[in-house]
Image 1 (spheres, helix red, strand yellow):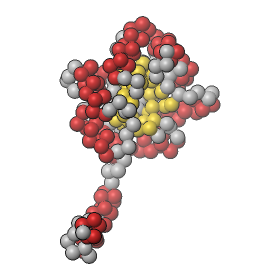
Image 2: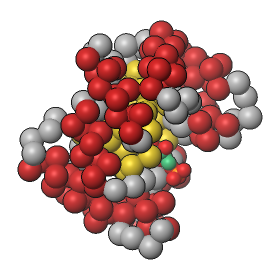
Image 3: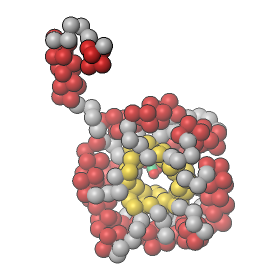
Image 4: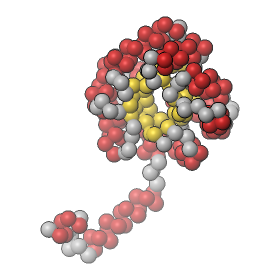
Length: 227
Ligand code: E4P
């Protein structure tokens, strides 16, 4: 499963990128607004921090077809080829996805709340579709169950589109979808940290170090003990 950081805080992005096997960063206008800074500048800084190979997802702002296509071109020229352009999965968005896909620009049908939206974005040529698990849960539906149904539809109709599961609130949701074979997930830094946030893990690691120190004459590593 591809794993993305759903945040625009450069410090957090760099911390996670350094430690975890991360594929890139996803943003949306609200995530960028949280930085309180010029969104274009923030996106440029993320690209320069991650290098040209990392995948960055960035979203168009207009809601008409030509405006979406124009923003998509602007984002690709700003951030380079390894950019996936997020397009809201609305009727105008499906057309923009189709036109951009014909040009070879990779898109993600975003703002996905229903399986049939995912179907339409996939059929239009989106490389990814991004369902919002937590927001679906908050509407009184089963976000994880809805994403599984979307995956079943994509498999049944043999679309290459990957699901980029988004809007997680906890690691259990990520576990459920990873187990189901969902191809990509984007999570806030706290949710990614939550994958290994477990007292038993910390205690086991502490005990191994403590046991080594009992017999290593104060040396805190194998390398130090060898000398
Ligand atoms: C990602 O594609 C979405 O924009 C994002 O995950 C939404 O997250 P939220 O529901 O926490 O705002």
